[in-house]
Image (cartoon, rainbow, N blue to C red; front, side, top):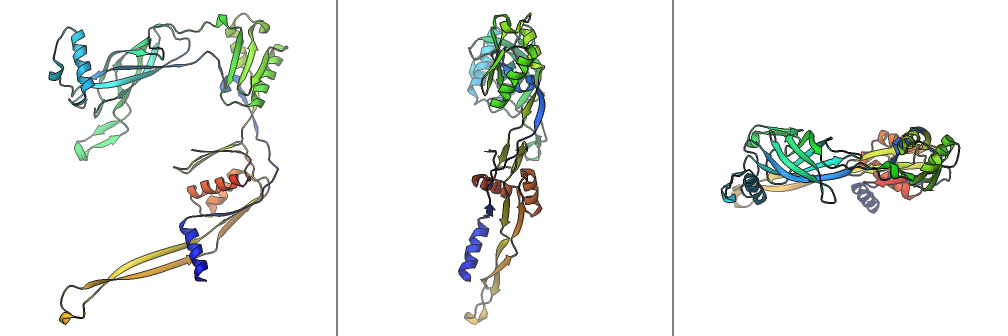
Length: 378
C-alpha cells in the first residue's frame, strides 16, 4: 500500500494527466465560407519593400544618449560640420540628442512626392525620445539606393512620469512614430503593361483553393484562361483574357467570390496557455481521466528549553513535520463521436483543469491520433 501511494504522489507532483483514446477514421469536413479573391491572394511582382535609415533625434530634455555613445557624438560633429560649424567630437555634449534607426514600408506603385509613415527607434542608451524631432535622414532600400527622405516630430505611444524610483512608465518611450514623416524620392511603380501572365499567389497555400480559383476565373471569362500550377500559384494568361489593360484584368479577378474550406488547425501557445481553434475540428471518441491527488508537507519549529545546565540558555528549535494527503476521486469526462475541440476544451475547464493542463491533453490526444488536424505549438 505504501509503494502504491508513493507512485501516485510522483504522478501528482509531475502533474500528469492519464488519457484513454479510441481512434476513429470518421472526420467531418470543415465549413465553407465565401471570400473575395483579393483577400486570400497577392499579385506576383507587386509587393511592399522595406526601407531603413540612420539619423539623429534632437530637442530632448536631457534624456538623450550619454557621452559614452561614441557614434552619436561623431554623427553630431559630422552634422555640425555640414552646417559650416567645426567642433571637436570630444567637446560635443549629446544629452539632448539620440542616434536612431528609421524604418518604413514602401508600398507598390509608389511615386515621388507620396508620403510614408515612419518608425524611429533609439540605438544608444537614451532614456526617452519624448518631445524629439528627427533631422532629415535618407532611407535606403535592400539594393542600397535612397528611396525616401524622413524628417519630423515624433509621436510617442508611451510616457514616463516622476523621477527615479518614484516614476511610472507606460509603454516604451524609446520608440516613436512620425505620420507622413517620409517622402518618396524614387519612382518604384511596376509596369503592368509588360505582364504576359498574371500570377496569383495564395497567402495560405492549398490545392483545393488554388483549383477553385482557376475554375471561378475560367467561368468568369467563359474560356480556359487560368491554370493552378501548384497549391500556392494560379497563372492567368493576359492575352487570352482579351481585356483593355492588365489593371482591368486584376480588378475583375480580385472581385470574384469563391468558396474556401476552413483548414482544420489548432494553434497553441504554451507560454500563455492560449488555444486558438480553426475550422470545425472533430474528435474521435475520447475519455479523459485527471488525477486529483494532492500532497502538502508543512514543517513548523517548536522552541524547547534545554535540559542540561540547570535549564538556562536559549531555547532550541525542534522541527515538527506534518504531512497532509488528500486523495479525492479522479475527475473524468467523455466525448462521443463527432464532438469538436471547442466542446473538449470547455469540458476540460468545467472539471477544473488549467489552461496549461488543457494544452498537454490536446498534445497527448494528437499523439494518439484522436485529432485529425494540424497542431501548431508556439
